[in-house]
Image (cartoon, rainbow, N blue to C red; front, side, top):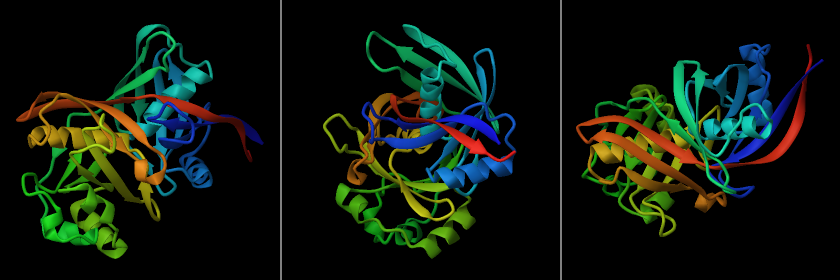
Length: 298
């Protein structure tokens, strides 16, 4: 029997039982991919992170949903950094600390910003966004039980990737966003045809006065679920909004999860111009809610 320390961390929040939960398994270098996948099914979170090794300020990390390994994810990154600090594996002194996660498809840059008694804020810089050809709005709207007029006409329905392919669906109002219901068979067909991992539906108004956007995120992994707060897709959304001039600020607050009872806040920064978005970062705080030991048969 082998034992592994693990933590359950709520990301993109400053209080427990809000934001998006992620299980983080430490010292996981000996675990085979099939075992990591089985653990992710057991944890049954939207993602489980595995820290497999450390060289200086570079950490080898893998992310799994209950159904598959994924190349990049936002809230597990925020959660994993917070877990490493909590477990004493990463120092986070006053000011800014730079580190790197070596993920399945390459490295990403991360920073920890700590000021006084405030919780450390984790900043994740995502990859240069890739924008695919627009999809037919009526077809996509039908997947979510909506009429074509629910989708904005000043921006395309489009798959955007800052490391993970996400379908961006800009809606006209909070009312249409609330009405969205996934037709699973149509969703699977569109997912296969368009080649995206999950779908991000959003409006350019917040759930609170602080928010510039509010979103819902739908994925099938392996069953349909709605994600409370989604860092990777929020980054892709930020790049999308800036490119299509639906948001003109380089910095804004994205909100998600309030209707699920798990409110989350993401600080978004977009670098570049609308014609050439260079990169986008998402930042937030996290809270450790469980510390334990995972026993796996050897």
